[in-house]
Image (cartoon, rainbow, N blue to C red; front, side, top):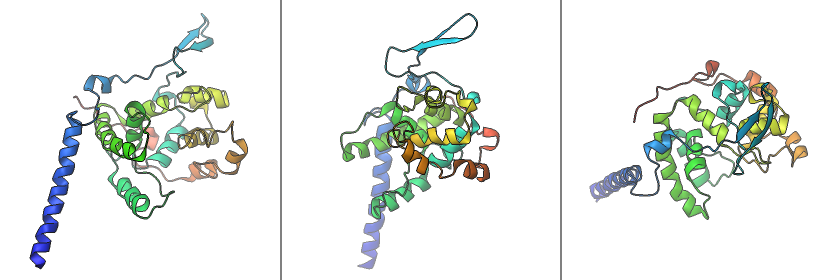
Length: 262
């Protein structure tokens, strides 16, 4: 009887592994859900605004057909505080994984799924969040959101194949909507602080990255008194960021992985 139970458990485990492998293979092949083709992954649609510049190099204004008033900023023009704050709060092992952080996934599964701890942190990596921003429409219910997750995992792995870590961070910050017609970190830096992203202080960078958790709840224009009491990224961003240990792969902000061909 004992051997029979063991055989059944082994069979169930093997069946489970095969089922998961089959589902992810089907997603990767495009049989389940929508996985963008290589051409679309290599040329994502970010919808940048048009900038009007005078002969002497002065910015006269920006214009966009859609509501996404996004102005491109390159990785080299980002404040190091933005990069460190984003990785430290959203994906501390960003430089180590290839799109999926297994440790973070199981932590979230156990703490949030089993013990129902609402503030246990999520399991999504920065790359998975980018895949969600690009390709996942707003879910109508929890079940639909759960079905979107495996598709985002597959897309995240593909994004890691075609882009360096710096490029992924740059796309994430260019894509995010900071509200108040401030789409993308460059427009957000201008809107909230009248600065370019590279000139942001630690506190200002922490403010914008804090909005990535909830741009409405932690919007400094709407809830300035709430934000002054507690920064969602760091209670004392200047002190903590200046004394924080180095994040692996972020020394000098260089963490590139070799770009792979399709």
